[in-house]
Length: 215
Image (cartoon, rainbow, N blue to C red; front, top):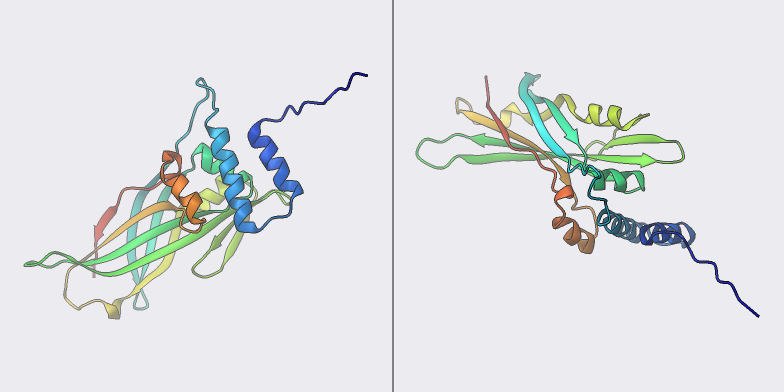
């Protein structure tokens, strides 16, 4: 008698993702395993395939005093890498963070960072509805978009965001602001953060942009 064994044609990363759909596991472990599967897939990219590493850029930024509060206007260019896109489409949420610093200029000493603000947004893709969700982790507000382009375009247009109360600043002292955008991976489990640390596709961070406070 001759026995015939059917051989799976799935790649290793496809097999892992298929197993994840069958086995019920904890959310954080799902995130780790999906990301690992995508890292494995990324190592097998053909040499003639275009690899997009992605980049973040702050194109412009300014402050406007409204009702005693300095509000932020900024324009960002957010381009995700291939690996970040694959993770997003597989259900792994991404956190995009704006880091704002308020720096007091001093003549005889080093400049002092009087305040720091982290503005975080979570970008998530929901396959069932085929919608992209942008959620402010600071306020809890969220919006839904039909395309990734529209979601990233929304993230890249910061308008009238309250940043710092003018009463917290020393009167008649010169200040400047610094702003940058980055892909934050601190929400992932420690083993996954260690792996992503060595992947340039996940090191998405803009240069600082600076401008003086005008009163």
